[in-house]
Image (cartoon, rainbow, N blue to C red):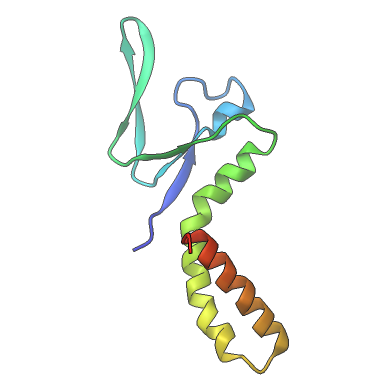
Length: 110
């Protein structure tokens, strides 16, 4: 079963700067819970997990969405590859199948 991910804002700093609005990649079931600790705001993850913390960069929002979509894209590539391999008589399908196979291998660390 594929892991579903989503992008969330920094629960404390959201809205203060665009980078804070695309800070964490988390599992779809994760919800942040903000609380006060010795008078300072802090937060914790309820259920789910934090997968990655995005660093400040110009294209942070796009990278965060791409990262979050990666498990679904990998599953789609696994589905598409046999169809392209079946169309082996079409040279363009062959090239596409090679590119998809390379992308899958890269994503799976092979």
